[in-house]
Image (cartoon, rainbow, N blue to C red; front, side, top):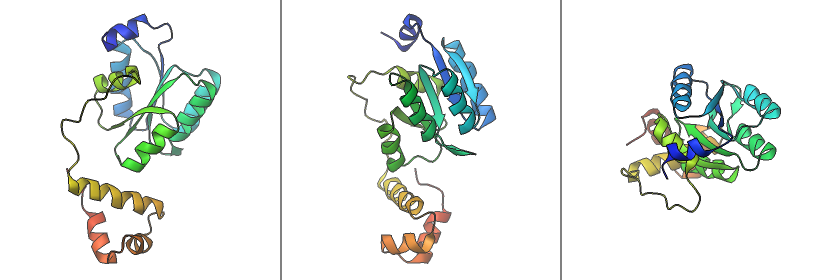
Length: 184
């Protein structure tokens, strides 16, 4: 059964999108409405939490980093209010540690931005029994290394000296790595 057919059969098509990038939020909302969802949008954590308190949706698409907090708070609140809800986390700062945390807090998937609406629908509608497909472009070894450094850097509250100590790396070398863009 296709994702579109699954949406058509659902009785509760409510979808909450929490995203602080206005242009992306509007584009994704329109795309999800054309795919049959009843979309509500919010651009910060507090609005998302308020909406969940009033009427918890069946689905949610939440940005990880928002202006007033962490999108994982929205996912956690949704799972408390409605355990059967399906949420996915979107982020432009993808790393393995936050993906694991998002799944532990109840998200069914974790996608990097810019995510295509079809990918979002596929992630929302995927069942746990389906075997996920292998990525067509897996991360390179350089990208995995960069992700690990970013994770440690975040765990050290963005303190370069402490991160360099924990990674057993010279501070200036770490600064050069942090100043560069992420490898592909």
